[in-house]
Length: 288
Image (cartoon, rainbow, N blue to C red):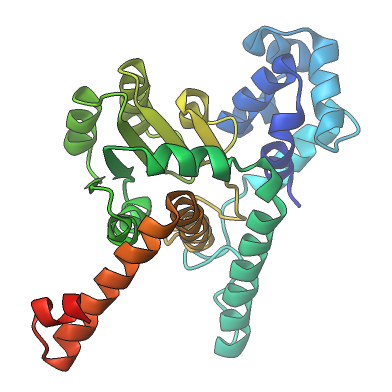
């Protein structure tokens, strides 16, 4: 596991001062490589011993080892297709690498379940007047997919996948609004700044994102999600699968919170789809 991944995994276990170092290092890996110990401590507004403790907390023997680990991570990717694939790989080998990486990403999500507040988030969703699914880029596609599933539980759902729509939903948010925000890095200003605005209005913000990111700092409930994805690579893969898996699990948790009402709504929704397939009217389907 590379050092940036270890920082993500250990973030919630770090002391507040160490978390300050983690945020800076995570956002400025190249600058950290070039910075002397005293300079990094100054930039993070912590003491030099705190920086050393941080290094040890994330599995490095010291500051030099941390910088060496960062140097190995920030090199340019071998391929813009996938972080594990080399241009010289045979097709079968390349496909195997992609699937293995996806499996590792889902296993990482499974190992983090004890850090994910499913019951609290499901309760907020079950009592919401409106749920807004937020994401930009590849995360936007996952947001649309999730909204398509969640609305069948009977709660009005909307999607916000561009800066203007996100800003408008945040501006009119109320305490009965729940935002479900998907972002692998959690650094897009149009996302975390507007979610901070929504929280100021009393809305609940559920974030599936990187621990320690700006979005993680403003959300109500954090689902730490840090699959092995290289953001230098053009096509996101593992992060999208991890987001979809977490949201599928959250939909099930919400259905359990709603109880019999959720079962009834899902049954009726399924009946309508079956009617369309079988050429039966919607009214006849509801009478079944």
